[in-house]
Length: 352
Image 1 (cartoon, rainbow, N blue to C red):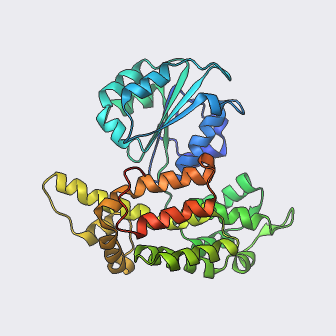
Image 2 (cartoon, rainbow, N blue to C red):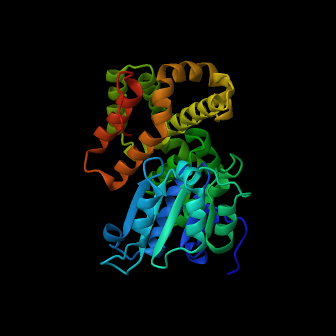
């Protein structure tokens, strides 16, 4: 098919086969769920079942150097189908630091490897963007608007969970759960188990099955951790897990707020590098914190501090990957570690 100028991950995930991967792939945007699922779909295109153990390598963008990635891309795999896939998570600082090298590589990429860059932003006026747009794979993973999400939910329920969901049910689900797509997907997965084959997921079923108690308890758990009350935060974590919440679902809920704290911290640090100052509330509002909770969020971010605020993105990524199979540690312990990281000011971990 002819290449579209602005593919969106929502369209890609409906029919991945219509969007064949290229040697250089860039997934950009602020929605972590869409980036994760789009990257997962690309891996399935590129690697046969079971090949990932030998043919997939992942790097953290702020902790690697281009020479290491270049060496990995040039390496011939001895197992699987012969193709390598190299993924750079949180690749924004990597692209900033090695833009010239990446431009040269994108002009003449290795034929036996696929490079996947996961970025938050990818300006269209850069030479690298134009190279990837011309000969690579470019995918927009930006967040959907609140108005678009109910339609996405009805399509996603049918495509991913094989259940029919009416618009009223989707709108109510957004009211209960919020706009985090990862969390909405988790709720759809659970709701699909309560619907008989051929039946429809209705607003009444959502009302009965999605209790507001769990959402309140999750926010309370996060508030307690941000206030430094570790024992009570962990007690709330245990209550949620005993009530049937999935660890991935819990992470999606708390990540909604923590990512915004991370973004606000970065806005403040970026302003300082330019010799400017930005008010804490202004940074929080620009990061997506709602006005009615700005005062509370400001107090929490002050307690969190810039050191941990800057570490949040790495901690969340590490926790997400660990819960999805990168660690043999029990999921409860993985989540407990995250609560400790954001709760205890005395912790000064060198790695996320």
